[in-house]
Length: 211
Ligand code: ADP
Ligand code: 5GP
Image 1 (cartoon, protein in one colour):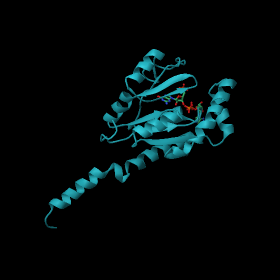
Image 2: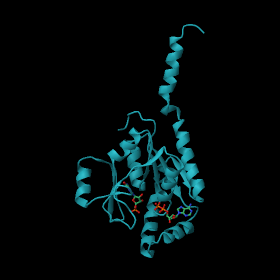
Image 3: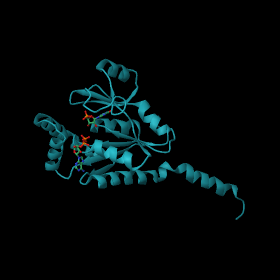
Image 4: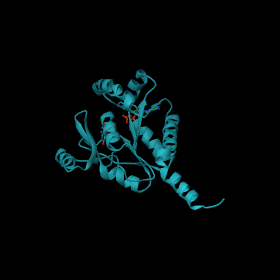
């Protein structure tokens, strides 16, 4: 868990519903093998085409509450009436494999991850404008009442956007994916994540008596 040394760190991607989390995650996974999906669990019913264990672990409410009680969830949230949570194991498995767990979770969940896992990098996505968000939600087939609920939720979500590390405007998708990948690349260069290499160099210098 936190404090252990891994090559990478979790990347948390949040956005109001329809902001592009799912498609950006797919883009990252296609772009580079270092990105991997960390599967989360939910009590919501499965949508056509979704696969248990791939898109989500679909669990009953009783199973979810048991996981939560046993401390097996890194974070959890109630979103639009359903429980969602990130199993600690899903994230750790990816980190142990030396890859970057890409977590597409709601705004509250993102903040909890950052509290427990300060090394995590959080990215907030926004569409270029509200009109585009509405078009994308409709284009995804959301019913008008669902669009309204999601926009209502977005009001409170954008209020906490300032707690994220980065903002990316999701205008053209390939560009968005490249920008998020570039953030990950730059984050690996942070000196605080690489002090072992600095120390190693320092100890080589210390051992050398004469140059
Ligand atoms: P979220 O997972 O954040 O709810 P999605 O990834 O499902 O959002 O995106 C919402 C809809 O908008 C989807 O139909 C998706 O294909 C579309 N979409 C997302 N980003 C873009 C983009 N940059 N250009 C065009 N369509 C997009
Ligand atoms: P959907 O039902 O459309 O797949 O997801 C609804 C919302 O729940 C999205 O904002 C999604 O990112 C979020 N979500 C999915 N999994 C998790 C999770 O494990 N934890 C949290 N906090 N949110 C999640």
